[in-house]
Image (cartoon, rainbow, N blue to C red; front, top):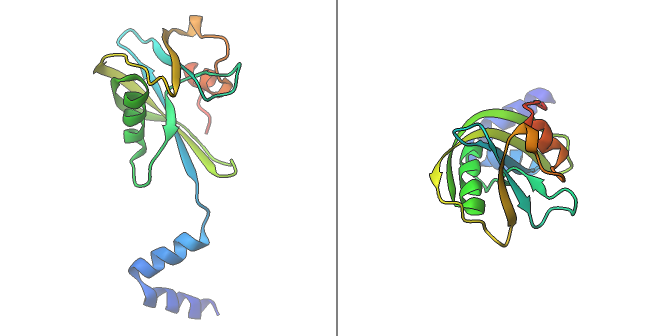
Length: 151
């Protein structure tokens, strides 16, 4: 039976194989976070309008769009939420196990732009050090701020 399946698999090739794989496997949304730092090492934290009360502070975060490189998701989300420009760095978090979501976080370095908050998503922005992290910071974002990797 396995030989027959393998033979059929080799025969169908290309787009049909991809369609079969697509139908047979789980689909996930990918949440991407940027741990943005300025030239002084301070971190950009945002108070998100749509996050739960008491846990609204966190790094710039959003969902990747289909076909988007996750590093570019960081660049796009930071620009959309704040008007700032960043260069993504190394991957600092990759976590799965959620029902329909995968979480990814990259370091990012501020390179320019003018702070302009998207009022639909962001209530406030702050540049912080480890010593002055705001109350209501998402616990996983507190870990990211401390450099604690979660794999």
